[in-house]
Length: 95
Image (tube, rainbow, N blue to C red; front, top):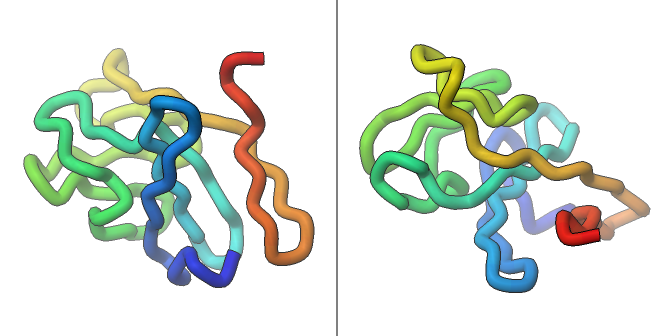
């Protein structure tokens, strides 16, 4: 958990997926790591509250739901996260 900056993100790989982990005021969220518009890595985006802004195109994503703010029918996948001590576990989306 120490590798995820406070109010920032970290990109990780799980199987063949890019997953963006976000530390929002000490709470960890996991979403699909690639922007659906431009394929930029969302973990590099600016975090403001529960939103991350894509560094490539500027689309804002809600890290709790995966929805794009102004286009609610568009969304990225979100994943369940468990934190045990310093370990962050993303529950396997293929189970």
